[in-house]
Image 1 (tube, one colour):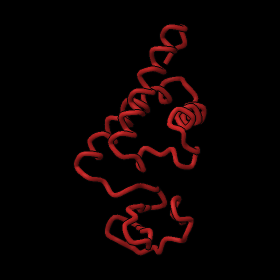
Image 2 (cartoon, helix red, strand yellow):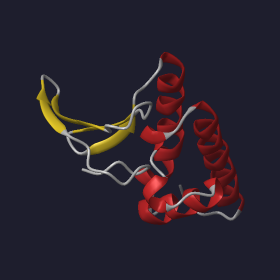
Image 3 (cartoon, helix red, strand yellow):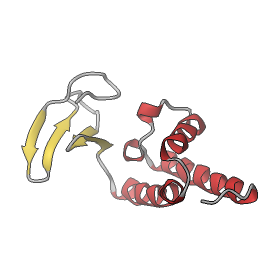
Length: 115
């Protein structure tokens, strides 16, 4: 597993929660648990990540294509598709996900596309 920011290998250890990899660069908060990338959650960004996932996932879990939706979100966020993971986002980025999701829902509803 490589840190998406520093492009260096993250050492892995076995924990009670599974395999955990941590970026060795001091100050970097990128982790991977069982192969899924994330940043360490604070109380604030944990709340917004849950909300962002709830609003965003509603679109692709119904009838919209998940891959296409993530590509559109990446463009909206100005990020690469590899950097477009809600688990890597802070509060402001989660707010953008929520805004994107609401705009997308409004567009799909206006154009009579089922979501």
